[in-house]
Length: 282
Image (cartoon, rainbow, N blue to C red; front, side):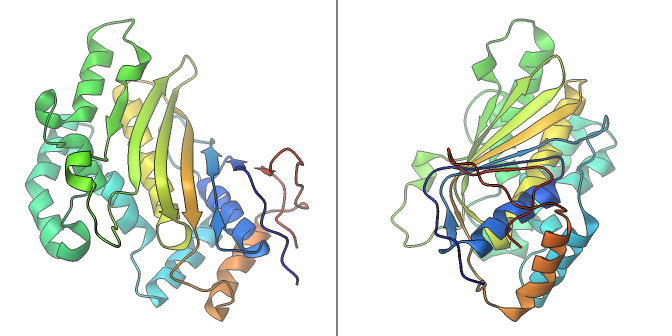
């Protein structure tokens, strides 16, 4: 099949399932020339009252199988760098315990993978930035302000990851941080979480990124006593790398991804809008 020309301008993906949202972005790269989308705007809904993340098992399983075959980190392992879901379960709804468990365990996380984790992890930056109120715990600051008074300015509900003092370095390659910051928008219908990436690795990290951001949003919604309504992710450059688009090992994942979209792909002239219930070119 001949490739469609690489489009210029933003690509919007809007889905009620993070598996389908991720798959739609990946299939767009597969079906077009070039390895990138710039920019990618991805939005996901479909979260239940408890914040459970909607997924398509066939896509998730095919991706985890391929990541394992390529000796790359699993979806859950990548998600854990953004939100430690397992520790939250152990904390049983006590956010102070969650923060304490994570702070105590963080040196071990660094020691387990010193090459990748030497500069820190995303949740560590959000809860131990190194400066600011609440000893640098930006999430605790946001929640304390939300709980403490009404009419708080909306710009207060954001947490930074990128730190110029630490991250403006001349290294040829830098694995961390790609996520720049997150913001939270409480509405009458529920909480919206927004995440902003300078770059993102679509095959290696993106699904885990989306899962971790959604889990972080569900945690914040729980603490704000509301539901997670929507997750938005804005990516400056989404790159398909660490695997060739023609790699035969990729085929089972592509098949699972295409199978989740029953109808034909429709493109809009004013910028590609890849919405629910459409299929990327057969």
